Image 1 (cartoon, rainbow, N blue to C red):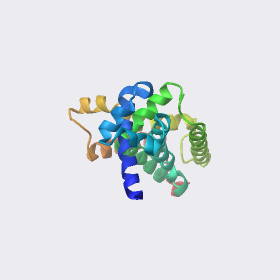
Image 2 (image 1 turned 30 degrees about the vertical axis):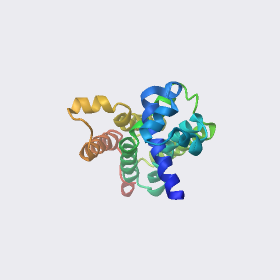
Image 3 (image 1 turned 90 degrees about the vertical axis):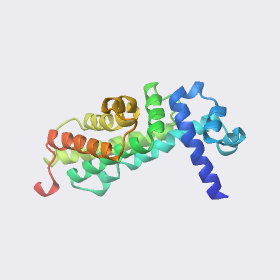
Length: 206
């Protein structure tokens, strides 16, 4: 039963991510989510209780990976290794959670009216921790002295655009959808821009 529940919840969240991304929170109908998920409408309320709870689940489906993406900053003391892994992780979120990423972006663009306070707090704590680590590396002379939060903003913008502006990117590339090689190429370009543009040096050169 637990496997069935987990499978159905995953189907509902993925369907809801797409419908919320296409129509927004207010205009989304649970009947449309149930139809896309190929499940009876009562299942939506059985598993999530309300549209609001389901919307939070969609936000959590992408904020949890976003929070986990900072692990390289804790795992590696070498800024080259940490930033390379971080950029790749951020791009994989755009690849694996495209609709939930759009829902999250839309929520932020509208002033985060439905984003729970506990998620906001965790994201804020993460940003501070990442900024502190970047400042630490800057103090060691391993990264050019920049405002660390704006460096993070630049990384977020360049990686999340592959989900939030997927239509524009696929149109420009002349293809129906992106494949793994596109994300690999994106990782290479963004990583080189950050590493070379910010004069990031390996820890061994400290």
